[in-house]
Image 1 (cartoon, rainbow, N blue to C red):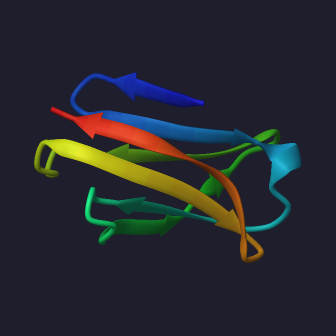
Image 2 (image 1 turned 135 degrees about the horizontal axis):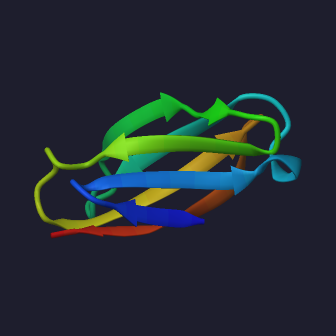
Length: 80
């Protein structure tokens, strides 16, 4: 689930059953270069991260979430 909110803040969220333990969120630009990496925060039933993308140049970005070395989610974000 990706929620676009005001002021260029994205919320990335995955259901807890898909992730056991810590998860790492990584954002890449269209060339595949890493532009952001952080550990995701968890609550009782979801793992989520709010990301301020207001400082990023316009373009296409790709995100992925990894837990225990395995890919558990990913997608695209367009910044304009």
